[in-house]
Length: 182
Image (cartoon, rainbow, N blue to C red; front, side, top):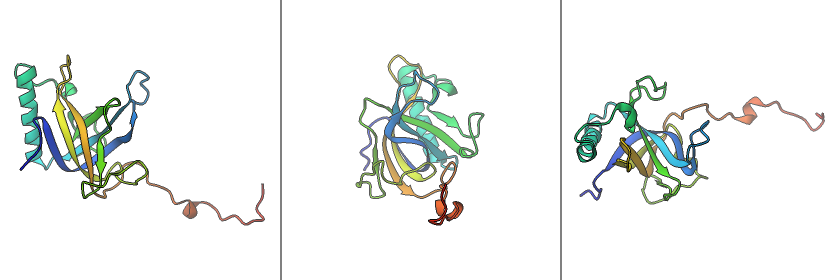
């Protein structure tokens, strides 16, 4: 039995990108950008069932707010990761941008059991890991867009981290003796 509300979708076993889960951040290089919590959800294109559910939700919202006409791709929270805005990490994925305003309570971030909260001191979740996500799709007041509100992020499994990996200092820095002085 599902306890999801209208507009909410559980997006399972997808990769996490650009996490801002514990501290809200604005868009880099844009001083007018308001700080937000959020992330990218990389939904595998092989998950055609979930993509169809999201498309059905877009159709429902379009009927309620836009006389049945879905907004242009640039005004949707979901993009094609193989498109011109994609990169090597998004190929083969649908990219869903899900955010929360700084004024809202931050999204719940939990471990595999769904009960143990993870805080900013934990090493999980991280960009590239596999998570389950609960999002609410909605149309903001007076906007011609469909957005996704990030509700819950549940760490599921490790994945290949995005970006440069951590460097082991002992492996790259020279050994210095007590006699080595400046």
